[in-house]
Length: 170
Image 1 (tube, rainbow, N blue to C red):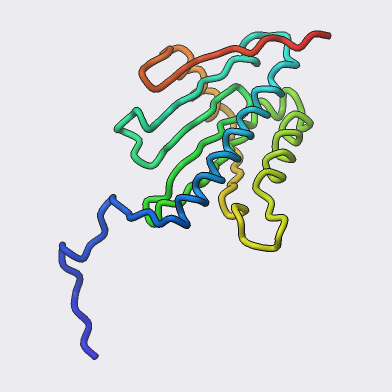
Image 2: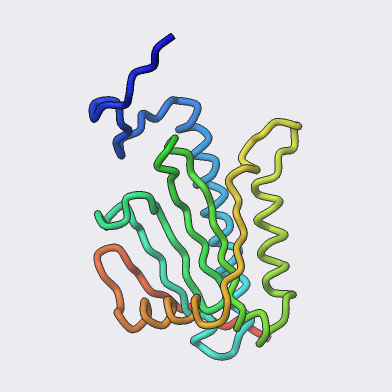
């Protein structure tokens, strides 16, 4: 059997059809992302210093430059990103852990967040569920903080909002 070389018409485009199954799964992944962000925000309440309680939320659907990013939560400690695979349109949640925050505050705070994230994506019925969607990455010193400080200094835009949670009462 002779194979045909790929032509321009056969090459992939950035537009991927989204099936009903993928859309339902993406809805579950987005729901888990939202709950993870809620937990991350709640964990920030324990800090006295405002910079450790400040965060940026980005709605990348309003930013044409980031075609594969959907939403993002960024704080001094973590970056939690909801993105879409360009291959099959499935959603993924990436959690980036910053070295400086881990060194400065230890791992208890991050462990509390990760415990919640794993529970939210865990399959309880022995199916694949959305376990595939969670990806945890470690960022060396300065990578996360440079992005965090730049985003805060640039301020709010049409797709970026910045907030600070209130300190938890002692």
